[in-house]
Image 1: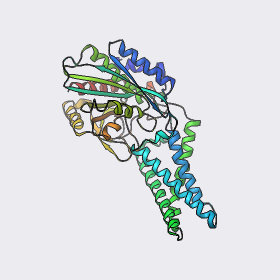
Image 2: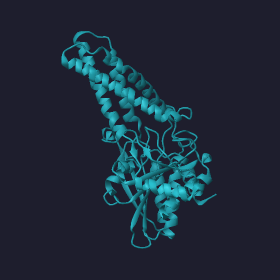
Image 3: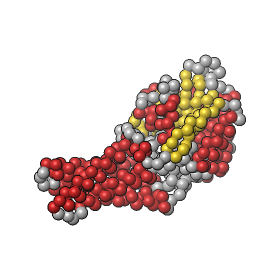
Length: 394
């Protein structure tokens, strides 16, 4: 077995699942710091605060849409009916605003919910001479709780399901606007307005069930592939570079917390604090690289879609042409999902993410109980590490 696989095995067997903001996430971060410091690598811990789970904001959105639909169809007459319809429109528009914040990242919905302490761990390996370029390798430490949306029989339709969900909830919001118009104009509420809200309301009922089932029935996944594999690749490369630095390239390794909370909170925190200093750096996010063929991701995020920087895409294309044996090809994160690259793509950094897949657009064992060490392929993990090393050297 290769060194990178040994690093992965030690990490996963020691810590298992690593929920965001949890004690195990903290201990895993401290373990990584000791590993880096043992090789005389300068480390920095960057604290930040984050929600511990995606459930509270998404459950709030689902309940608001559902309550709006119930109020819109509740049988009442006269003034009571007008009040209920007004509340229905208000709840729907509030839900739409929260939904847009969650899927776009344009405003921080998480600030409305209780937060806990987390942190990023940064390791810096200087160049042998004065650096002319800096590269940031990034991998998240935390793991996700299994959810029916990622059930092996449903996950292939994850992107399509997100698009359908967005359309139905947009219609729900349009129905709310119709109700509001009818009430404000003093006329009869438009007959079609309530019926536009029905599909989104039923979908939200399903959403409430999925989220409660997630919290009450399903467990946290071990996260060997997502993202113990990325952690192992970045850790192994930092150790190697500590003894053989690149000639003119300074390498930052960033192990982020709280990537799995509905928004890559650790990556956003890193960009806020170090973005000005590293705006000219190249960012490579390493995620899900323990099984399958390597893929560089051209698009990701929910709405609007974010695109990898053209310079990074060209670099990947050159490597793919030079090394056809790696099977390095383009792909994309399905709509509704993201990586730690998101905050950097949103602001135009030279950034791209790398993962491995066995079927187009879907990483293996994604957010499910079968994401365990036994399902990582050592050869695939080593190949991914070789690709990342080649990117650094190039």
